[in-house]
Length: 168
Ligand SMILES: [Zn+2]
Ligand SMILES: [Zn+2]
Image (cartoon, rainbow, N blue to C red; front, side, top):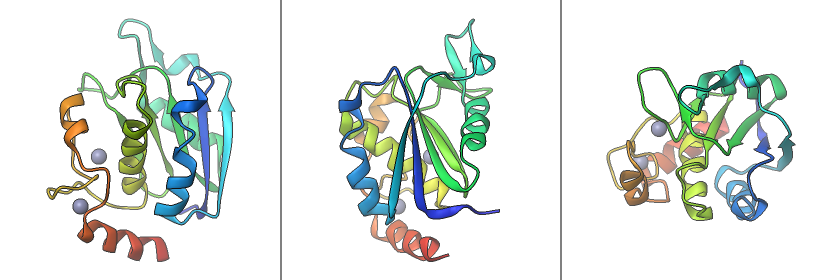
């Protein structure tokens, strides 16, 4: 079941400094035509998602937690610590089509533009976009270097697809 695409819940780990995510709301509103962005602070992330031996959160576990915090609207959970999924050393974030995403700022060098780029990428997946090979924000990145090289905007092809998907 798809959620309301007009409202985004931005759930932010209390460990993240607010200046890092301040530019995020206006640009997400513009790109994805959100009418409302509800900004909430996550005081505590579930301990059960934390893997002490890796000093990382299990991203899929946090995605489930995020989804449970918002049953009707899309949700993006921004996490201070590093994330992993099974069989990968780390991920910048993960997304679930029509539901929401989890993004970590741990490797994003305290750079608001970098954070914005990763959130836009994951929201692209939430709206149903796949990875792209053109200079495009939907390019897959496996390292900080690759993520930095990635374009911060959608290519014309992805943008057209996105606009179609947003109409539903
Ligand atoms: Zn991706
Ligand atoms: Zn593209």
